Length: 316
Ligand code: SF4
Ligand code: SF4
Image (tube, rainbow, N blue to C red):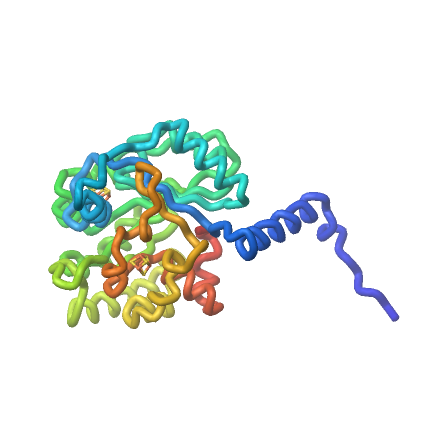
């Protein structure tokens, strides 16, 4: 019998190390209950006060009963946590806030500790290229044309943000669609495309039931049509699939959300306390959740080929 040829490339030392690493990670997730990724809100501070900010509404919830002392972990305390999580085998960290660039020192440390880092930022402060092999992915918010963006963000920051992201291939635009800006989807995509970033993805505005910014009824239908249109026109630039769109509408992903399942993704407040999920501290948010992370993870778990294809250049 003729044995199949084994490519020498497959038995390279680094491949063996890689396979051992993957096996160790799977073992950790399965048996030692190590989360598959972490999300750190590293600061309470922000240089903006946006109308739709889920972080500050969630922080206000935490203040109920005087529980939130606004303590922020020191650089060294965060670094200890980063290292501890990395030693457990976690390789992907998402850094949020507040505005994480207000603690730039910590960003320099995080990219050295984790092989895969996502930084979620409003884009006002330019993020430097770090002296590491794997540059972080930058999720930069854009909500509309100049007038709309400045209006939602409550400050004239549009020009500065555009200047900071221009031709930076680390940047993916994160566009939160609400009842305010759903009509601007094509404009937002065009602005992102013309400014040379790597892509754009959409989040549905998340809030409690009576929130006027929630996207419902006809505006929601219009948003869906517009997203389908830009997906056709801009191809791979749109980091989004039809399945993800379907899950946003049906909310089928909610019971399977990776934040609700134990030991999947852990999310922390700036004082180091665990929070319910990245969106806030209450399960009541789930019925109107528009977070891209559980939607994308659920579509991947269901092996949707379009989602797999769209997300392959986008390491969560
Ligand atoms: S920039 Fe982000 S953290 Fe700051 S207020 Fe706006 S939404 Fe909230
Ligand atoms: S609000 Fe969204 S991200 Fe948070 S637990 Fe609920 S479904 Fe998951």
